Image 1 (tube, one colour):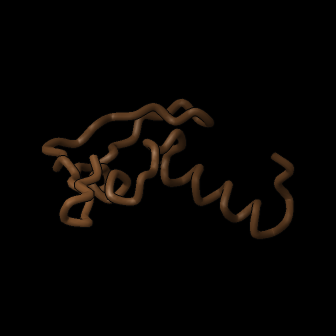
Image 2 (cartoon, helix red, strand yellow):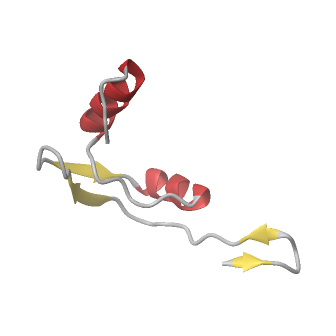
Image 3 (cartoon, helix red, strand yellow):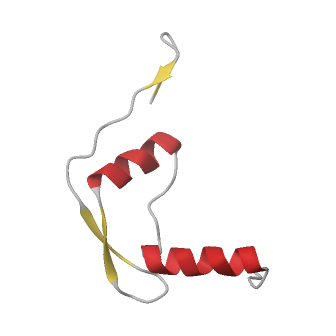
Length: 68
């Protein structure tokens, strides 16, 4: 929630880790509290892919082999 009077954004701190399921491989991965806080401050949504599949997808994009 933005606080316009002071020109800063208030962010709720996350207390615990979450277990998420990767949309690509189906493996469960941990989304740590610090990662959640980082994503929240940047306005990102929760990751849908595990770190390994995110790295694979990024490598494919950088190599020009991803079409979607």
